[in-house]
Length: 381
Ligand code: NAD
Ligand code: MG
Image (cartoon, rainbow, N blue to C red; front, top):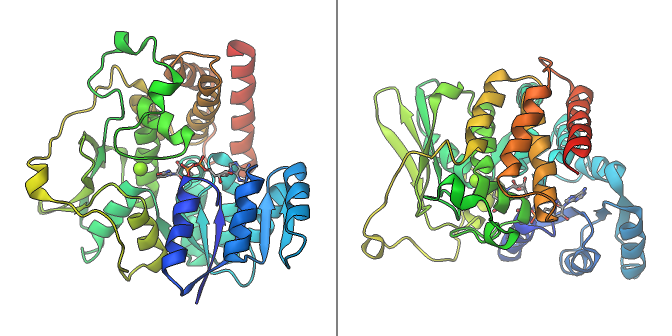
């Protein structure tokens, strides 16, 4: 029996993780956490019987407590609750499928308690990779990537000799606006941006895919997970999303991982690594596909990608500012308060005014986040 906890169980990654639990009887759910969807959390508790459940607000936790009062489950709230379930003695693996920088503290708490991390919450690694990776080494806890590109890189590295990686070829679908020019993106609506061609995901990451900020975050995520320089990461637009990413070794040999776009594969791989379990689903049919295509990303139109390289190279608190500005700007866009192209503008303006600090601890990272929010509140809300 492998006992797992899921932060963000009601979201896209969270619910797909639970689908995997359904088909693998040797997985057991110890803890679940979510933001506000009490109704779905109640259903999940009745089906998966976790010993502890967390809702973000006191009100949602109170509501949940009443709904599941016939069950032996403990209900907790807020950051305190997240930190507590991150360290539950019975739990072995924590799936971090929460969205945003809120994941930093629970992830660190889980690692300190020796838990294996199945990491979907890329914002944590982007903003605190310099703390997370050394801690993983110190505590000897595996960080298994759930993000499909990083899982592909990780799978491609299996069997390759350590230290012989030369380059990461990070593929990108290009999102719903691939091929469009800046002028054509002036009047993009929220509905347009939420329509992703290949993947069905939470709202924030879907907008991030449309701006290509998601690829920017993934570049920084890859830098930390695989200990490479930014010069060793090349982004390649590959609209079919069949090659999930590749690695090039020092002799020029390239290994890639391919498959139909389905997040259940990387989630399941992280849960059972190094094993591979059967998984139902559509298989790649090369006859039907005919061809796979590749292009250079349009850095002019999708400024968010370029800004990520800049933030990553600057390092320190700059990736936290990049990420926080994006989180806030995406929320404002989803609220119809700003235009699509303003997302990248807000990120750039936030980065320009920030005088970065090197090697920040969690407090300083969260201060940079708060400062960025203040700046955006004053200038754009
Ligand atoms: P989502 O919006 O569908 O789900 C987010 C989950 O986090 C929900 O369960 C929500 O209730 C919970 N949550 C949000 N704020 C919370 C809080 N304050 N306290 C407790 N729970 C909270 O998002 P998603 O698409 O599943 O993405 C989750 C993470 O995985 C993100 O970091 C995203 O970048 C990453 N990711 C997602 C995909 C995908 O296919 N969806 C792929 C790769 C990486
Ligand atoms: Mg991805």
